[in-house]
Image (tube, rainbow, N blue to C red; front, side):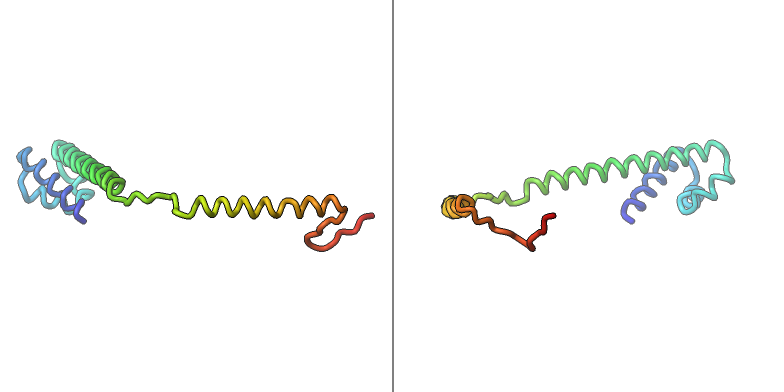
Amino acid sequence: MLTREASNNLIRSTLLSKGFPSSEIQSAVSNPSSFMHSHDRKFKSDLVEAYRRGFKTIFIVCGALAALATVLALFMMPQVDLEREDDKRLEEESFEKRDQEKPVEEETKAGGIARQQGPAQETD
């Protein structure tokens, strides 16, 4: 809605600067498609050029605002450290637990006892 008003104001100011009457400009801005079929070639080309300038200006402004929002978001986001105080302790505990479980698995394999997970499969 805001961009529509800004675009309409840009179109009005462009057409006013070219010397067109404000009544024609108002009706052209309110219903441009019907206006394109009923007026002279000069007005049509100026109307199209005014719309082009309006849309270009709105595009540039919105693009700049989006870029600004991105930069602000990057700087305003809190920087969180991913290192925890207990990371080293937890890492050492996991290595110790893994090292303690390895000999049990090796003994099982060495003793010829195989663990089965899931149902036993029959062989032909």
